[in-house]
Amino acid sequence: QTLITQFPETNEIISFGSGYGGNSLLGKKCFALRIATNIARKEGWLAEHMLIMGLESPEHQKIYIAAAFPSACGKTNLAMMTPSLPGWKVTCVGDDIAWMKFDKEGNLRAINPENGFFGVCPGTNHKSNPVAMEIINNNTIFTNVCETSEGGVFWEGLEDETDLKNLEFIDWQNKKWNPSGNTKSSHPNSRFCSPLTNCPILDENWDDPEGVPISAIIFGGRRPKGVPLVYQSFDWAHGILVGASVKSETTSAASDDKPNTIVHDPFAMRPFFGYNCGDYMQHWLDVGRIPNRKLPLIFNVNWFLKDDNANYLWPGYGENSRVLKWIHERCQGKSNFLKTVIGNVPKKEFFDITGLENLNIDKLFEVDKNFWKNELNETRNFFETVIYKEFPSELDQILKQMEQDCM
Image (cartoon, rainbow, N blue to C red; front, side, top):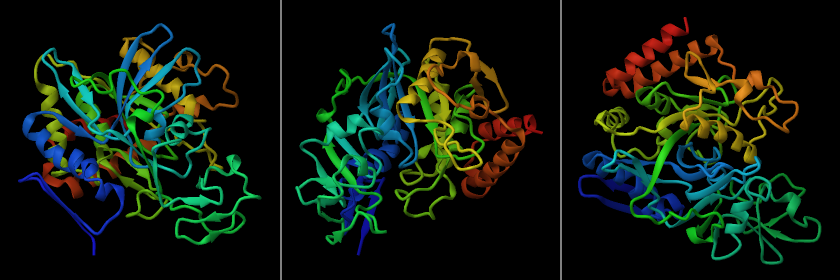
């Protein structure tokens, strides 16, 4: 039997029968999100399923960004990104959870309440995440991965870095594994667990008790069609609606849903809300209403757009630094955008694609009103049936305006 329970009235957790990290490492999701969201609601701050990263331009202008993506949508890869753009630098404060509170000067400051990384192994390699590959070199616990005859580890994604012909393998179920067979060597949600100090790009302020000042908040999901590579919300309240409207194509890490279906995941917090989602949205609205607060800009990104042949339109990984550059410039007040019915998208001439070939930039920033008419209709149906009476009226008015603009 398995039982994982959280008691927000008494801030207690009881977990029995599960060895999965999210259920057995009780300081993670159980406390730092489900219990902490209730504490944050009472005390006026935010507990979020977000990475925290530093982004520094070649001119040494540094900002901090918090970003929320559903599981297996590239959050860890972004937090540890090696930028492809010369002179740009990324530092990591955390890759999973952020506690954020406004200080006396009105700045939103974030800390990482964790002291390590708990990352998905499959797909992690020196191309997708070279920083993670350095992190896991020592003092790391692997769960549900494949073991090699040399005492090393293996998972899907390491084929080009492993001697498949001359090594023997024991899979995650302790059975002999053949690379030419049709079974997986490792569980799709197998993990590495490493201390934060293993990170070679750990931010200098990673343990500052005051936190780091957040200039931008990013939401995103895995959307093969319709959602642009990046867009900015019109304001704080509209940004909350953007976060509440997050949807993502399911993967193996979201094991409760059928693969390759689009599911709602508000704020990328669907498994982690400590109280009902409508009141959660209202809490975000409330913390933004207090006078003299410097509200971060809010964005949505989508690395996963595909063409009609199911090929990705965007190269991702280190090239995502080009999107972050545009976000950085927006935080400096640069007018590098076009207003659309869903938010502000980049002006093509101000978006750096130097060195990229065969890129359909028009498709990357396309806002199709027919798509968004259907998208908003489906989103409204979700809010009215799932969130119901708790859906804030302020967000309802913003949604109505967007629906009218798409007519």
